[in-house]
Length: 205
Image 1 (cartoon, rainbow, N blue to C red):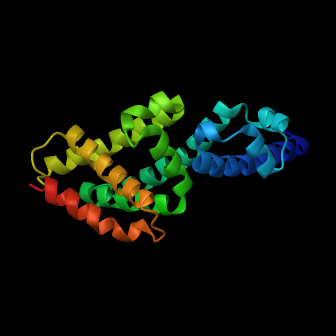
Image 2 (image 1 turned 45 degrees about the vertical axis):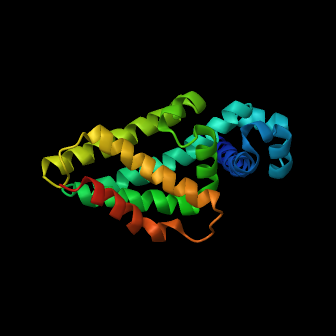
Image 3 (image 1 turned 90 degrees about the vertical axis):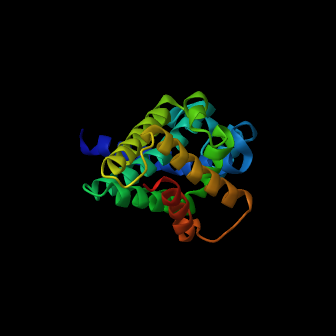
């Protein structure tokens, strides 16, 4: 790739980022059905035709928004997992902190996720792109492995790692959904000890 091609690629990436940021806000505020390409075009300063050229139609734009946000969260979860190679309980606690921190800084993403998937992980692949579904599977497998390791070390009761993983996910989903629905503006991450207390109180050996 020569210098001119690199500049063009960088400019295209910059435009994509700007469009995705506007689309994220629009989908969060209006929902998928309510947000129009004209809304997004008007707010971003790019024409509808240009958005089609750079990213695609409305469905492609929606998927790109969710996949971009989902990739960021999955990367953070993977990083905190790797930072606790011999401490599954510590990794689980760190994942709770990571998800709540991400919620605080990316509330529009969670608004879309909770609205369209109804907080139910089984709905993710039906509603969103296969790419986001794959991120969900990888994260679920990661957390399931941590619960299995915790059980093997006697840190939890002899429970199914799959069941613990489901309960873990729905505990976080329910907490952030209730927080968002109540319109709280403080940082939910300050309440992480509540989730940790409820989780470990329920699964400790």
